Amino acid sequence: MIVQRELTWLRMLFSYKGSALTRTLPRIVSITVFSAVATAVVRYYELEHYTLTVTPFTLIGLALAIFLGFRNNAAYDRFWEGRKLWGQLVNSSRSFAREVLMLVVPPANRPAADPHVREFQEDLIRRMVGYVHSLRHHLRDSIPYEDLAGFIPAAEFPQLQDEKNVPVAILLDLGVRLRKAWRDGWISDFHLATVERTLSAITDVQGGCERIKNTPIPFAYTVLLHRTVAFYCLFLPFGIIDTVRWLTPLVVALISHAFLGLDEIGGEIEEPFGIEPQDLPLTAISRTIEVNLLQAIERKEVPELLEPAEGVLV
Image 1 (cartoon, rainbow, N blue to C red):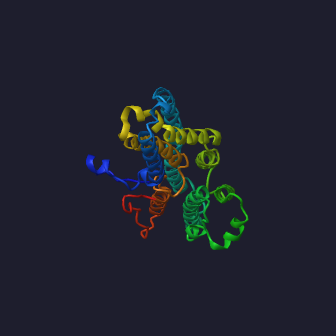
Image 2: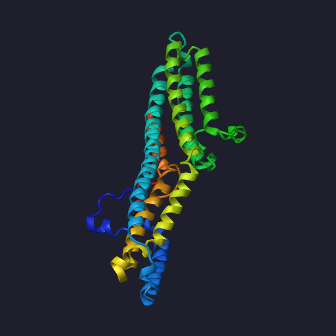
C-alpha cells in the first residue's frame, strides 16, 4: 500500500509512481496518436461534414462517468471491508493472547503443573502467530511454510501440506488443544466458551476475506465498462473535431486519462489482498500481530515492525 503522505500539491500533481498512469500511459498514447492521425486526415481532406456531433458523446460520457463511479465505489467497499477484517483480526488475536494468559491456569491443588501450563500458553500464542501468517499466504495463494517456521513445529508441516485450507487446520488444532486443557482442568467451562468465541470471531474474519477473494465484481459488468471506455475514447475525436479542431488530440488525451484511469483504479483495488502497491499491507499487519503476541509472552527478541520502502508498505 502506498503511504506517501507528505507530498506538496505540486508534487502530487506530477506524481507518477503509484498512480494509474503507470499502466494506462500506453493506452493513452495509442489513443492520442490515433486521434492525431484522424484529426490530420479529417482536416486535410476537409471531411468535417462526415464526422459525428458532440451530443451522443455528452450523453454517453455522463452515463459512463456514473457507471465508473458506481464500479469504483463497489471496488473500494471491497478494499475497505478487507482492511476492517484485518483490523478485527489484529484485535481478536490480541484478545486470544490475553485470554490464554489470563484464563488458562493450573488448578490450585496442582502447583506442579504451572511450568507445563506456561509452555502450553506460549505454544498456543505462537500457533496463533502462525495462523496469521498462513492466512496471509492463503489469501495471496503463496506457500506459507517459511513464515510458519518457529511458530509451528516443522514435524507438523507434512500434515499441513495435505490440507486444502491451512489456516482452518491451524484453528481446528487450536480448538483441540484447548479442549485438552479443559479436560486437564487448566481452563473452566465458562472460560473455554470465552476463548472459543474469540476463535469463532477469527473464523468469521477468514470467511469474510475468502468471500472477497473468491467473489469478484461480475465479469460481464467489468467487460462492458472496458469496452465502453475504449470505444468512447476511440470515437471521441470524430465528435469534437468540429469544435476544438487541431486541439482534438490534446482534449482526447485528457479525457482518456480520466476515464482510463478511473477504470484502472477500480480494477486495482477490487482485489485488496495481492502484492501490488495499491493492495493492503498484509505483511506489515502480520508483523504487527507477531510482535504484539510475542511481547505478550515476554519474548525480548522480536522482529522490527515493517517500514515503508520507497513509500510502499507491503
